[in-house]
Image 1: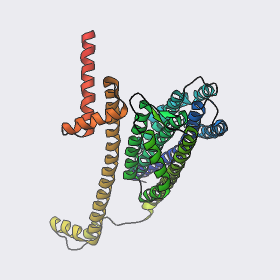
Image 2: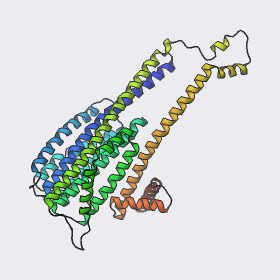
Image 3: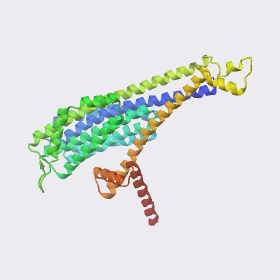
Image 4: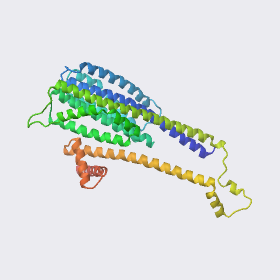
Length: 427
């Protein structure tokens, strides 16, 4: 076997290894999806339990906590397998994300104990659950960012934004559950509710952009118009502006609190159905790509067994020699020559298309990272909420006729320059 043949086989085996790792990653995403869903249920029930001083949702919270613990055990088993590999296929950034989440998981029992003893407020408990879920979603984001296959990358990006949108819907459920159970919404919770609604829509819009047609159809089919109408009506009730110095009344709190929880749960469960379908599609896609790569490997192994004449072999065997120029022209115009040229062009075009698609996907991910970092700086230095920072960044980019990504990069560059100048002064 020639060196070129050996290199080709090695390259295909590398593709199979990478695709096998992506299939494992798809399984991890599925485990994370199930655990997050159970955590979201536990968070919503815990909020009502705390807001009602233990009078409501005690049994339901206990049930959801058991479900969360079971899902956590399965997820930990899958993640532990990565740490036991001699040379993990996972990227270093993905492993660091998993390690950070592992530390946070170890604090979950302490959070539950604080809820049991009412030594934590509903808002603080919700925020603690939010932080853990954010870390879990970061694992999914890293999985999407490290994928090398454009089809798999697009599916992972769709899954990430759907999961993020569902998490924001879960936070909305917890925020609304607190206000309705408490009997009123203050200005802070009313603003938070509005922000969560806006952020959800952005995530779902991105999901639809990257999702397959099948996933988009499932999305349209699963969301019940009647459920959505009920949620919209309660959102309007929560966001009504009361007279000066008063908070929004939501009496009777018991009825509205439970109605809100049930309606938002129906919506979140419907989103989970779409999420499950998309994760199944991802797994099928990964295994189909593996099968295709394995077929290519077997075909490449069989290549030396088949005799194929060199493109110019028959021409060189002719009795009447021809000038080199004529030979070249004959080779290019022959059926074999045309087939080789068309094959090369088709492969080049396909590879360029895959490369462009992968680069566009990665560009979207990079721009999202820039915007998130710039939002963080604006929030820290201008004392703005996340939504205010986003609107400020969007308005500034429009005023200066720049894309949001370019504006975000300019803000980050300016911040770094000012930091270096300040460090120089301090010396």
